[in-house]
Image 1 (tube, rainbow, N blue to C red):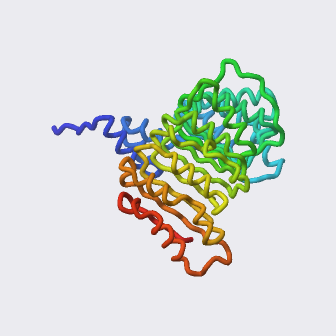
Image 2: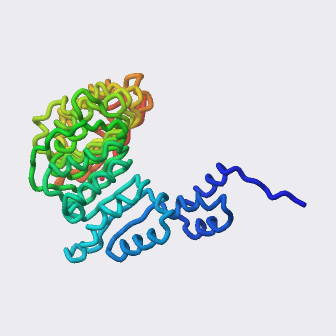
Image 3: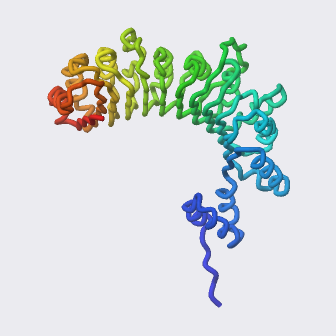
Length: 375
């Protein structure tokens, strides 16, 4: 009698992992044998998205009937499909529901007002306690009443590895009593801040005196605001920072910025630098200072998105010094990509700015790669 072939559980898990979001195949796997059941359920019940009262009710009833499946849920996304206040009453059930998900690791909230979710002290406490287990938190189009609420949310989630905030607003600034014990975000690796009411509020909530961060990737849209908080953030994680993407946001005050606003001299592990929404000649001196302070021997790519107001604006950059600095042996193989947008009324010959840049970086072209894309 032939023996039934035996597959190591590790091999079964890896094979099922390849299916990922093929729910029909995953369902079939879960019915095949007991060894395949748990890894298939890990994907089948991993993530849920709630958009209205019906979705919320069905999931609540489903878990009441099958409570043993609760520990498979890792991700919950709340994206209301309606903006009518009467249709948002179900959001009040989210804190209590979230508190039941003992292994929840990722939460996303979108198109909501925080007061609709945390409508009273009890619900606020429930949802903030749940945030303590999170590894990833995403807010998109979320409105808070005050900066104090934002700080309390951050303080409740000290174990985050990733924090994303898109268009997060609040109406008032208020002082927050010191949190005891203070939260240290030692696991935070990725931070994205895009169009938030105050970068300082978020940055102040993450940086503690005499503590550093372990951030590896930062994406910040300044939205025309001051860059001082960005400098503080970079200094707090200069030992670990690898990927920095900064959208200047056509800041009219950039001529008053100092290079210290974004000093990369101590960012020794930096691999990728992307500066967006730059305007020449307004930011020429500042941009030159930033590039000339780079020291990381791991740097592989620099990407610059620049709007050129007129041809002489290109001369605002110190091309000679930039060429000499980025051509040093420690930057061998560096890829510099410049995306150029030409202002209205600019010369119709787009090759003029490209030729100017290429002729200004002769040594860098020998030791690395220079690309110019005219948009």
